[in-house]
Length: 207
Length: 202
Image: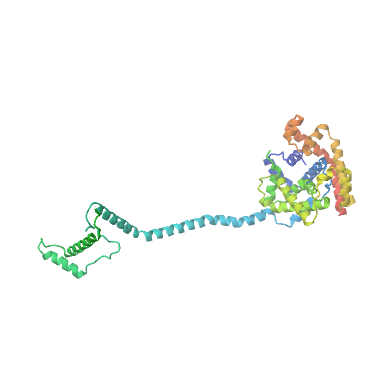
C-alpha cells in the first residue's frame, strides 16, 4: 500500500480531499477490500476517541447490511429501468405537441372557412344600415331608392326569363322618351307606395 | 474542499449500481448510527438491528437522494424515524441516552452488558479494541495526538486545526494520517486475530 494513497484515504475519510481526487479514490475504495478494511478501522479509531460507549466495535453490521442488499438489484439497473419509459415519453413529447398544434390549426382553418362567406354579407348589412341612417339624417325624407329599406329578410325578386325578354324587347322598340324600364317603374312605384305608408305612420310633431 | 464531497462521490457510485461504495458508507457511519439509535433503545443488539434496517432503507431510497443535504444528515433522519417506529411498534417508551450520561459510566456499562445478548468473547474483543486504540493514542507524539483528537473528538476541519496548532493545512493532513497509521498498525493485529476468532465463534 503506498503512503500517498493512504494519506489520500485519511483525508477523504475527513472529507478534506478535493472532489476530483474523491471520485478516483471512491472508485478504488469500492473495489479494494484491503483499502475498505483500513477505512473501517479509521471509523473504529474515531469511535474509540469519541468514547462511544455501548457501541460494539467488533459489530458485523456492515457485513449484515452487505448480505441484505446483495439480493437486491443494483440501483443503476433500477434507475435505467425507471428511466427507460421516461426517455420514451421524452421522445414522444415533441411529436405529441406538434400533433396537438396541427389539430388546433386545422380546426381554426375549418372554422374560418365556415365563417368567411358570412363576413362580407355582415359587412354589407352594416354598410346598408349606415347609408340608410345617413340618408335619413340628411333629410332625404324616406327610404332611398338606391338602398332598399329591408334587404335583410326580404327575398330577392328575380324576374322570369319571359319577363326579362319582354323588357329587353320593349326597350329596343320604345321611343327614347318612353324608354323607361318597366321593372324600374315597378320598383319605383312600389318604393313610393312604401314611403307614403311610412310617412303616414309617423306621428305629427307636437307643438 | 467541497462539502460532503467524499460521501457524495461514494453516493454517486452507489446510484450508478456500485454496491461496494455503499459498504464504505456503512463502515464509516455504522458506529455513529448505532450510538444515535441507542438514544431510543438501550440494548446494543437491538440498536444494531435498527441501524441495519435504517441502512437498508437508505440504500433503497438512495435514487431519490439528490445531494441537497449532507449524506449523514439524510441518513440521520432515516435512522431516527426507523428507531421511533421500532419503539412504537414494540410498545416501549423511548429511553433517552442523555439520562444515562448523568449516571456513573461503569454502572451504565454493566447495565448495557446485562441486556446485551452478545457473547462474552465479543465483549472481550470490544474491550480489547478500545484499550488497544487508547494505548496507541497515548503513545503518539504530542503533535500527532493533538491533531487526531481535535479532528475526531472536536470535529474541527483541517483549516481550523491548522489555525489552532499554528501550522500549514498540509502539515495537519500529514499529522492526522501518521496518527491513524500508528494506531491502525496496532489495531490491525487485534482485528486480524480477534475478528477471526469472533467469526469462528459465530
